[in-house]
Image (cartoon, rainbow, N blue to C red; front, side, top):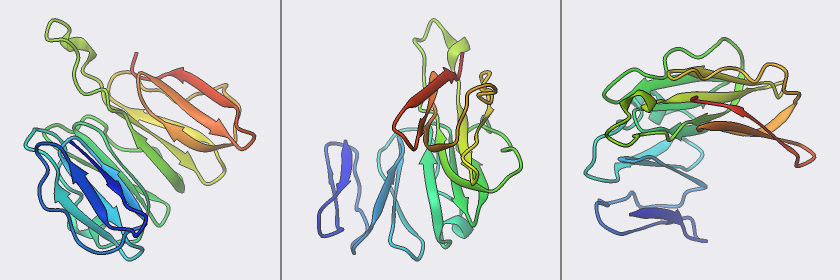
Length: 178
């Protein structure tokens, strides 16, 4: 299943496992394995997106806030609200506490499941951008800060390789959940 925003701001979902999405006009959409949220400037409207295990919708205080960014992993979600990183877990607290700082963006890894024979690679971590463009990462599975990778960055993505894009369009990657 999947969802997207139409040009008029309404939400369209397709495929199996989707439930009723909120009506109205939205500017951004955030999708996880079992939850979806849409932002309309004054908070979030969230829905159950699939009948699978995974992270729950954000807590009520985050839903009501004007978020800067939000990301769902398989077992964790994180949102930036007024520069603060706020994370919540689904079944396990695998991402943990973010480092101190004023954040502008977040990405939670989607490394949900490894083959059944290799449970040691059940990783999940998060990376965020601080307001000065510094990339920081934290969580389960050996996620580390990029260290010697020079920024500043304007966009970040967490995964088995974490990557960040600079203003000039160049990209730097480092080991994420390794």
